[in-house]
Length: 244
Image (cartoon, rainbow, N blue to C red):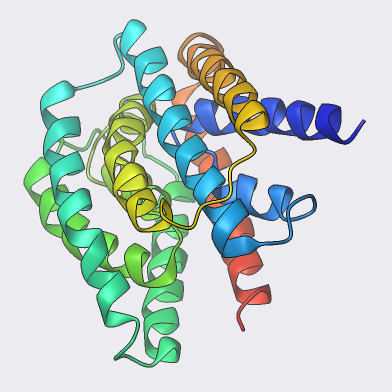
């Protein structure tokens, strides 16, 4: 019964994360913590591995529907992979309260922009140079807090003129490699249940691909913006609640 609950829960969470162009770690960590009690050696390694797999299959799902700009996705992937470890290094030298203030300010601003009504006939041009510049502090900030760059990167793409579905596709690819690079330090001590891990990887891959295809075909871009706006508020409140 325990295994069925875990598989069913991760199936649902992977569909949702695939729809939003995110890896599943944002929801997998609190969910898996109910069943595995070693956060560092069991939950985090498994969540990071699943995050990379679900993100890349979500990216493939958006790509199949024509919602992935490969050039932008690859550039952002390089930036996030290089910048995120800087935040992990700074965590030992900077007071957390200052970083949380910056993060909350960013979330409030991005959420406001996501819900800000767009006037008829108003269409903002894509500004990818601005996104590249902002991706550096976003990745450092995410590395510091362990929240993953996708939560701030996707709304940044949207407010810089990218259609929400293209933003989801780009974002999914961009967060894939940081997930795997963040997994590397855990490999020596990771405690994987190999049978369950393999099942969850297959379930996560299929479900996230299906989720991305659902968004591509049935979800309006404006609705996706608002769903994501609500999600980042919920996850921010969760992170604040779990601050030690």
